[in-house]
Image 1 (cartoon, rainbow, N blue to C red):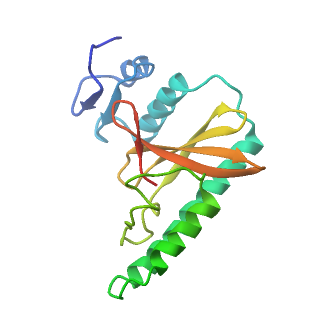
Image 2: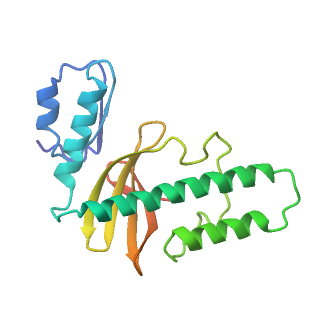
Length: 189
């Protein structure tokens, strides 16, 4: 099925069957599904079918996937701790400590690329319980190359995210985050 220029489609109270939905899984359309017509399990199965259709056909080493996921979860935990610290300092005079700790965190867990407009250059943080990544759920992994793996996740609102992790000197480092909006678009870490 090919519908020109349609990037996303929201199905609410539709007559589309689950079989019909699965038949459209190989399209590049981002579907937003309500919970009334389809069960959580069906939505998860459809989302997995969409990811599988779009994935690189390169074989994913399970040990590499586990190591990359572990590195990403460590980054999430470190960001949460940093955001707690930044929140505690919100009323204090800024002596550069929030920035210094953010820079250290990115140096430890991320590739050394410039992230113009985003952390660590631009300081922003979530004051919500758990921080920016507290509600994220890892859903899948994809091998981009021998030293690059995408880890897929859903945020606390159910929006699709993916993180590129790159192996450097035997360690997995977070390189970038992307959000689905008709196609994968870069977002800040």
